[in-house]
Image (cartoon, rainbow, N blue to C red):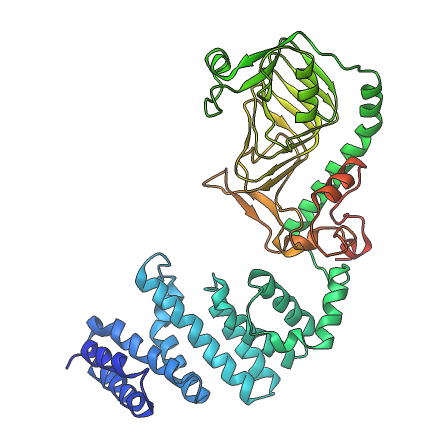
Length: 456
């Protein structure tokens, strides 16, 4: 028989009873012996890989021996960088490297306390870590944690444990560590900022966040004076049907045919907040149909306060927009000109959308499954958030993807960027608390002036 035929027979037996498993191992050995040329390279590697896996739970020394043979077979491909991640063969080779380096490291961890051997196992495991790209590969990181603990490097071990649990809260490898009082004490201290270490990219972000907060603080007094000196101004208004609005202004036509908008003919100044309740009050002054879904502003819109889409507020501004904060929910909002939104925008839920055709000037963009701008002019922060989400579910943007600029790359551990006292009593993210911080000119993130950041 050729190597492939031996392997196919072994695969039929290796998950059977004990005798069938013994037969499978013999067939894999015969497959290895039958490999005669380069044409059999895949089968040669595959048979060693399966033998390594079959011995992993019962004989770690034998598993480690097969693991070394696997790495020897792959040595030239590893050294030359010839493993192609996007091919089936390359993905199998990566799996072999992960499993083999872990098998050797785990056997070392179980069998010795020699620090040099443990350190060498840790270095070998780093090869397998190069191919960790999914939560299910966290078994390598579990082995790394165990090696670090045997080397008395608890800080590193606990950091990895915590990161794994962020990526996959249901992973069970670390249950014994989670139950350990020492880890629980470390975790409490970490979340108070006592063990946090920032890399250069994170430090640059924190400096940007501080600059944004400083700019907001500088503008608070000026904004208050401007608000006090600016009265509400409502231009001529009337009710326009959806069909006429679609024809005249090119608005979407998905609303019911009998729906209407409140049309303002000129610049509109509102003492905020601007909500559907404010729209209904304005409509009460007019006669005619009251099936109103929102407003059209044929000019600029200035709101001394917030725009809050809490109940299908549809908003179309043909000029520029200025407001403090914009919450977009299940209405459709289109701004044809520029938008200056002093404290940030928050897009929540996927029924509505916010489109800004001109330039957006805002310091914070908070996205929760919503169609909205992903970037702004100058310094700004992009975040994926959800109200009441746990601190581990909030992600802060590093920069847009180089190939697809509308898609963002995020910090792996975003929650550590926030000031320790930012989180709610339930240890969750609150949009209201975030907004309260911003409106007071407070920085919700760690300040670069903090002692623990300056000392790094």
